[in-house]
Image (cartoon, rainbow, N blue to C red; front, side):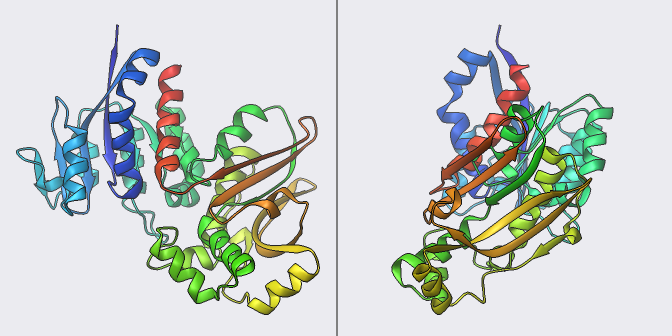
Length: 344
């Protein structure tokens, strides 16, 4: 018997749209392997919401977005100006997918949507970092108290299973150090500057033109995106309740061609590294521009790659990396989390 799982999607941008495309593409695989039919009963974006108790057609939503329209333009079921939280509060669903942008100051609208879904007994899968950074213990407690799962592998390094690797495969290990290149934008810029002689402005413009940097790249190039991901890894993998103000943060805007040339002459690679290091019962956290030996696994990553290294007491030193040319791997990480919920 195939089980029906009704889901809500908040955020139908680059990641959310790709998630819908994966639902279409992998429908038969999901039903054959998991005996689960994923039915989208609601979707929300900046235009409003679309809700249908029997299910919306994911392809219609994808086509609307391709035309520059929103889910509120969905015939019959679209409603302009309705907040996403109203949909989450009223819809009949088993699962919330959050791929929305969020304010760093408030975590909204994702934080309220996640809280509401957990309180109503829905599982939550999110690619949205900010609510976790602002309220990780609170959201975990809500999920536990209501007997549902909160999963977030897509929040750290896109499609790289950095969280799942640390939680599942290193569950019995003492992780005394982790380090990684967790932000694609900065790695793209630094690699293009070092390897191809581009200026910072040229590399940033190219990253924006190819979709590897936002129109406003400040969160990335100033190091805060990587710091957010480090906080999530601290809570989820290290079991340490770090806050953002415990992370020493440096960006890449001061990196010059001369600095990169000096590093190359010394046989080094310049990368923006996120690091957590155990110090007694605590950890030290930083995001900083680092000169790496050429033999370091993170020094070998190319422009479109991210990676992580876990240093452990019983599992050795484990490195994982990903080439992420589009948002598809991030959307696939959300789907991977959905599969883990229903695989049981």
